[in-house]
Length: 164
Image 1 (cartoon, one colour):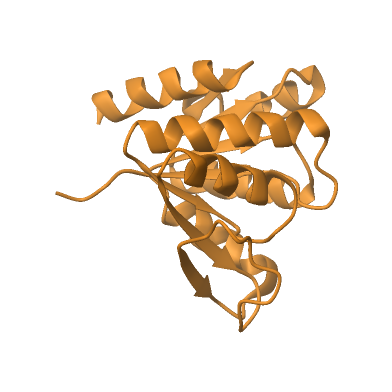
Image 2 (cartoon, rainbow, N blue to C red):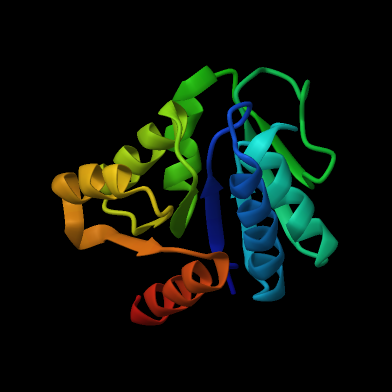
């Protein structure tokens, strides 16, 4: 039986402390649910924190890297996929995930949310930022869910997976 893949997307260098804390907890909860965590694989920000959380809980992690090697990879990535695609790898992140959770916001994260919406993938925004919520709601409300904390995001994922 194929494992469920949950993509956690979020800022790298510009991630806030809250983004990293939420990402770590998301990674833990994803691993505890026996799902696979997929991130951008780098050793910074949300990507690194989510991978470390998943590894701390014994989970399996996949990192989709922007370069043609594993330079700058999170030490908590089990399966590294070097793409040599730069930011175009964001589409691989989205299309390879059953559900996308955006933890925080940045330009790359915004592109991943938009790609998820365009591809018809369910997306969860883990943010209390009303401007971000309003913007993405105006694009595609039907596929978009909002969470204010990691346990709420995981509960939403469970509902989405059950519905499919």
